[in-house]
Length: 289
Image (cartoon, rainbow, N blue to C red; front, side, top):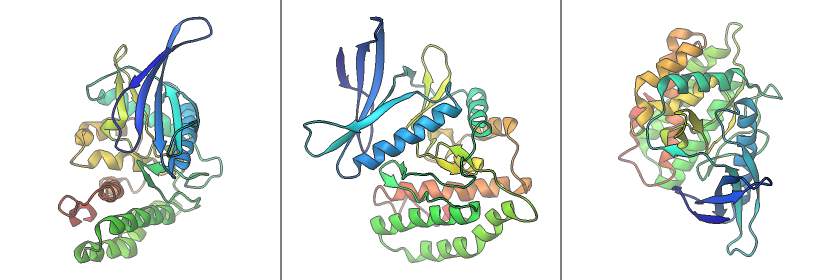
């Protein structure tokens, strides 16, 4: 048995563990451990999220093994143990990725019929507003509000951005997202990964199949998972990825407003990115337009 540092993470320490199973065959695990006060909630939230994702898509989400508290470590730290997959450093195949993300969304549903998640989940090291809510419009408004609050906490008030944000909350969300739940329409809450950028997607070396990990899971509108693919800083910004997804999953009605919704959904990931560092130059108000 052996263990060594493996991979990179901005907020945790990661390692690969080589072991043998009860039959004497070699097996490997991916270990992540998080120091500090939030480590317990982060590890539990990711474990529960990954467990539900794996149930819905076992050939797309590595199997989580367990989580818990490390012994004799100062400061107090918690770990997450996951089935290890050997990845090659290439972008995922758009056709395979589109099929598998759509299948995940089709094969999952909220056990309560509501949006959100039963326990706290994190986008990276940041807690998300995932309290249960029967309305997607209301839930998304609160999700974005918390990301914006954390941005203000990190970077301070930016009057121009604040003016745009207030219009987004008072006018754009009720109109654009509210239309999904108007005139007899409804949004089905499905399990979403929540942070599906290219750094959280791997291509398996032996098969070329895509796998997703490092989730920020909750039950939401399926289209929300694609907002992050629009961000210019990510390699999955190529329209081919969104196009392949839409070959397998039709846009919600109003269909003609799909691209506008995708742009608005990308604002949440951009706001969350700004909570991690001072970035007034890199977080323009154009994210909300």
